[in-house]
Image 1: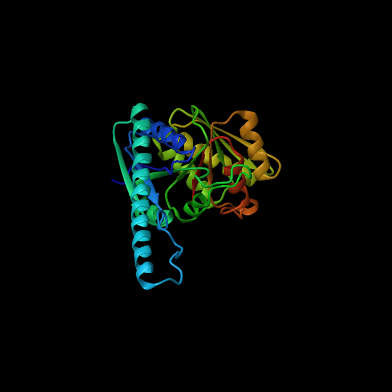
Image 2: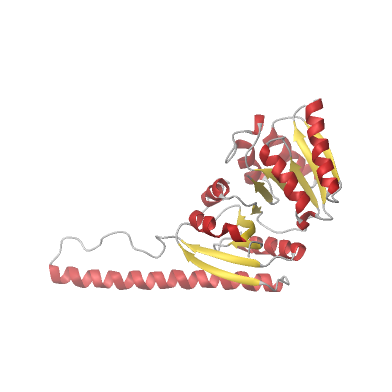
Length: 284
C-alpha cells in the first residue's frame, strides 16, 4: 500500500510524540499507520575478542561461552525491539487509530527506509534519537541521513504533541519550496488549517509574484492562505516568527534556493529543525 504513515520509533523520549503525531495524521487522512523499529547490525553483538593468547581447550571453552552470551544479548535486543513496537501500538490504539501494523527490521535504518518508502505517504521520525546529546542540542544523525536520502515527505516530530491549527510554509521560490506548496494543496492533512506562506528577504516584484502564485495554487485547492515577507536571515527570522506568531507546524523544502541554499542539507533547515519546538515537515 503506497499510502501508509510510516512511524520510526527507537524507544527514546521522542517515540511517544512520533506516535501521537502519527495518530493525528491518520485521523485527518484516513491512512493506516505502520510502526517501524530498526535494530542496527551491531546491536547485541560483542565486537571485541576477549579470548586472548590462552590454551586451545580453555580458549575454545571461552569462545563458546562468549558465543552463548552474544546469542542471549541478541535475543534481549530483539525482545526490547518488540516491546517498543507493542508500546507504540498501544499508544496509537489509545488515540483511536484502528489500522496499525508493526515491523521489526535488522540493518541500517537509512537503507531500511529506502526499501519501504515506496509504501509511504510520509515518514515520521523524532528530532533526536535515543543516543542524542540533548545538552548540546544535536540533531539525530539518523534524521539527517534520512532527510538526505528520502524522496517522501519527512515529518520531524517535536518533543511533545500539541494540537496543530496554524502552519508556516517557508517559501523561497526554489524547487523544494514549490513541491511543499503542491504537497499542502494536495494533502487532506492541511484542509481546515490556517496556512501562512512566508518569504524571508525583500518584497521585490518577483518575490510578491511568487507568493501570489503559491497563494493562488493553495486557494484552488480550497486552502485560504495568507502571505508575508519578513526581513533578516532565514534561520533566525523564521524561528522568531514561529515563536512570536504561535505557529504549530513548519513546512519547508529540504533544499533551499539562493540564500537558503546550503541546507542539511543546509543551514536554514538544520537550524529550523534544531531550534523549533514545533514539528517540521521537510520535502525534497
